[in-house]
Amino acid sequence: MLTGIDLNSVRFAEPLYLWLLVIPATLLVAWGWQFSTRRRDARQFRQHRRLPVRERFPIFGGLAFWFCLILASALTTLALARPTAAVSLVRTAGVDLVVLQDGSASMLTPDVPGNRWQRSIRFLRVLGESLAWKDDRMAMALFAHIAAPQVRLTKDPNTFFFFLDHLSQASPFRLEDDTTWDTNIELGIAWGMRLIEKDTEIYGKSPNAKTFVLVTDGQAWSGEVARSLRLARERQVPVYVVGVGTTNGGWIPEAPQPAPIPGRAAVTPAPQQPKIRSSLDRNSLAMIAAAGGGEYMELDREGDREIANRVIDAARKRAGSRGLEVASEELYWRCLAAAAILMGLGLFFLQERIELWLQAASAGAALFFVWTLTR
Image 1 (cartoon, rainbow, N blue to C red):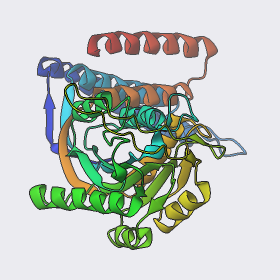
Image 2 (tube, rainbow, N blue to C red):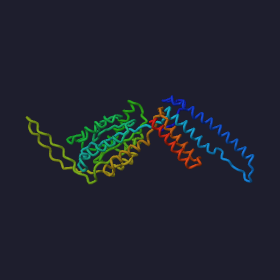
Image 3 (cartoon, one colour):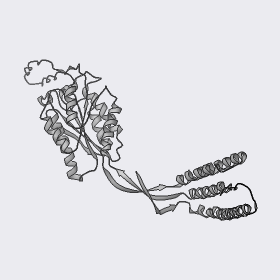
Image 4 (cartoon, rainbow, N blue to C red):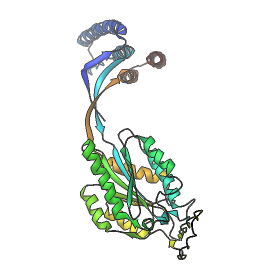
């Protein structure tokens, strides 16, 4: 946001054009002489002319147009000199999005195109593409029964997209591991807090607005979620929940049997476990979002871009300020805009229609010529 222009810092990229200001200065002196002559003649005319009604004479008459024209020509000359000045900008802080991605077995349920894991990774790519990445940062942690941080808070989009490319097909948590068959949301949020704390420890406190983006189906979740949500709210980190999957659900794939090792006795296969059906736990996820001070959204009920923009916009509204930043700004366009306004104002003082169109065409041609020179 622009706060002010330091007039003492005004510089001209083409100062040779400034000598042309002699012309409008001379015309302004001539205009002043004409104005004083007009007022003197009006007083003398009023003294010698006797009418039953007092006659009124316009103060400026046709001179008003010429006054505007002289000022517009002076501003146009300044535009040719390409003025620049130091301006003070209030720099708004960015956002820190910490993605908490569910990597449990239920995320492999194929009730959405591909499966829930692949669908959520496609959404995360859209979320990353929606960030400006100037002052914005992203981090990512996966969780099932255990949690595994993948990306620390970083400004580098290549780091984030690198992990998405390598995680696009399947979760790093294997179906053969018992720890994969649980959704410990409490631990996921706790690891998200640890990522933020570690970043503060290394780089100091950041004015960026912190936000958790929890992507999960909520199937068979465990842990004391209320405790982690309370901690997140105390640290002013809202939790936005993005549900993936359908309420009708589907069957979780079975864990593959270990392949026999040549030269060793065949291992007796474990007794086949009954299939587990997984469905989206919409009500629980909505409660988590409400308790976390965020909002619940659901993939394929709303567009990915819409969800991403809502999360980012909500975070930006909470972002702080990075203070004032001094930058250099060209002022020629402001001079041209002021000249155009003065010319438009002067046209209202013209009396003759033909004179009006001639002056308007001449002024437009002159401004277009100056604009082509200052491009």
